[in-house]
Image 1 (cartoon, rainbow, N blue to C red):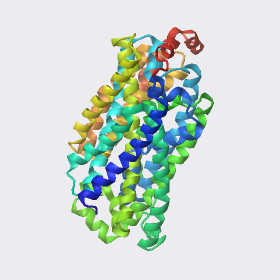
Image 2 (cartoon, one colour; image 1 turned 90 degrees about the horizontal axis):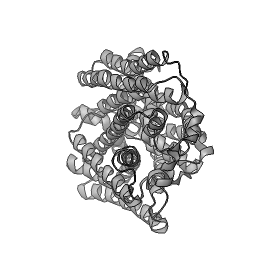
Image 3 (spheres, helix red, strand yellow; image 1 turned 60 degrees about the vertical axis):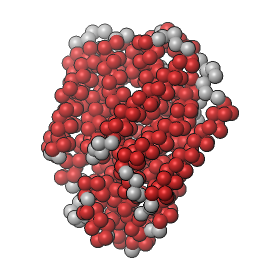
Image 4 (spheres, rainbow, N blue to C red; image 1 turned 30 degrees about the vertical axis):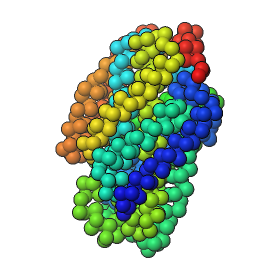
Length: 499
């Protein structure tokens, strides 16, 4: 493993490179409000695809894929990876339709406000979308803290603060434009490092048979992709949470509105395919670890923590120190790309959907930029505080997957169903949160597979049932084309580009 000096040098050096790249572009172009919040709506297809792929390579994609391969073999990998990729393809047509009817929007709550003119619904949706971003900060700071403290002798608290500080340092400068720029760099780093290290570990550990012989995980009992135990205990909850995720994730909506209008569909399709390469490749490390007695012994020394870090442990076990440092850069790239995207998502919601809408509609551009940066710092501090409690990654993953489920049908139907009412959408969100999320928290703490599945199904089903009950009784049909005649487009005029 690395010593303290090497660990600090690695994370600070990584951050310094990204900070310099952002500073250089900022120096040339300045900071503009639409650039900060929405990257001027001119992000190209390739940059957009790399950006959304990198933003979705969060802690689970880097760590849980290896853990599942180690613990639950090919079955665990399938039920984690397949819905992770599928969610891009489910979201793509939704994003195209949203951009068609709301081309100058900033978020889904922004769209909901203008469709329904209902503050209660708008605030209920903000609860989910802000909560989801807070969850992203918590899980990625936790994973980064565990990784740094495992690789070095750094205390967990210092490691978490460093992880959050790196992402904040460059994101505060120019917001989403900085995020897209660094996402492209980070995605290239992730793919390049993975394509070198994973085959190298495979060869060093004994060759392809190490993967083939341990495809069933450390116990060898999960060789069937559709193993009923894994499919029920993990697959159902994972699939519901992952498919719902983009519909509650402002990171996806920001890129829906940030990319060029004719690139929306391609961005999410290409992004999903690019993303899929990463968890598929990294899961190989879990299979190799499952066949290595030394790694198994290391994991068993502290299974609650080390099982989550089985990927880095495998790299450190089979490869030299510099390879472990390269893998750390891969992990930092995945974690910081999601962290900076979460900070940008928070700034958009806080600026457009809270401050400008409810506090100061005529705020000066300089004030809006300050609000955006302050919101990053505030929610970042809350997320770091929770991460310092060191929650289990799988708990956070499944719990805020349940939170995302609360937004799935209200969001989906708000753009597809003309008869959905504001009351239906609001109560669908609130009841899903009030009933489904606490059950999910309890189920995951108790580690009860049946309750975890019930909570996941309940969270998404409540939203569907409520939407249908209210909507089917609504005799009025909403005309989406009316949005184009609204005065909402003054939003773009108020957030005009200026230094």
